[in-house]
Length: 352
Image 1 (tube, one colour):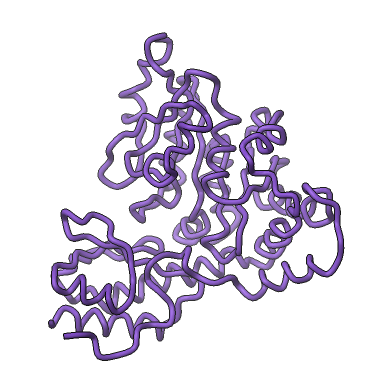
Image 2 (tube, helix red, strand yellow; image 1 turned 135 degrees about the horizontal axis):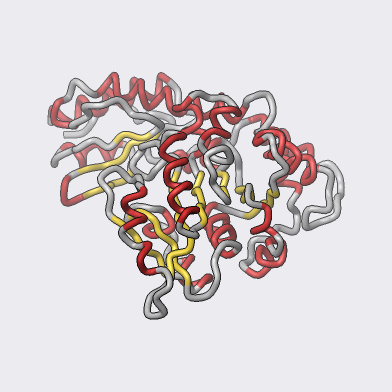
């Protein structure tokens, strides 16, 4: 048997599958109406950098790259010395989903620590900090945390502050992978002040700031709160193949994205649609959806044949196949109609 209705227009697979917001497309089109010098020597790039400084209420250093993996590699390249290591969770994107890019390009070891919820704690860092000063081990030098995490959880400002305080006390720097940072900010309050509370105010040294999952076409930003780490960033960005010659097309997007609360408005929709999906499917006890999503992802348990039936109807990613767990993810452009259609498809699949 098959599901008897057309699939939703928008996938519940990933916010990477979403489109580009019309205002962002318009900004790209405006930047396309004239010639401008390359490599950031245009009007949009300084303007975008200024907006990042305004967002964080500090003179931060911001540089733009092609994508998320490049952002993380560039950030870590500016933070690491030879024979050093990065402490992260076992589910961190840099450890699982970047094809070993940090190891290959940086020659750095990743010390990935299993956690129950995708979040590091000072005790996790404490378990490996004794490796510092031992020439037989790669020396832990950077702690990398993800906000929001790969498991859909969010660090509170106090949790980030505790990590940063412990790391700095022991001579480590802190990197934040913010591929879905706007979703986390919305979950915690949706204001620039809230965003600052778990980044620059909490003691984070370098931030990978994500925009593509939030409505941009391409291009991420690396924001240095500890500006002493950015003294060679332009050279390092070139060396790790992240210098965009037509940078104005990245910068123009961020000029639009960082004004009029667009970054928060788009993430608000993504988060609220995940909550709507939860509300319309949680009554199916077999899915195991017992708590509301914090950001824009849900992790249901779906047994066969329902899982195959549902994924033949509309695609979404598996997550933990031995435990029959999958991931549903909403985006800035997900609609209530999409949610209602998907929820009805779930109901039909579970009845087969």
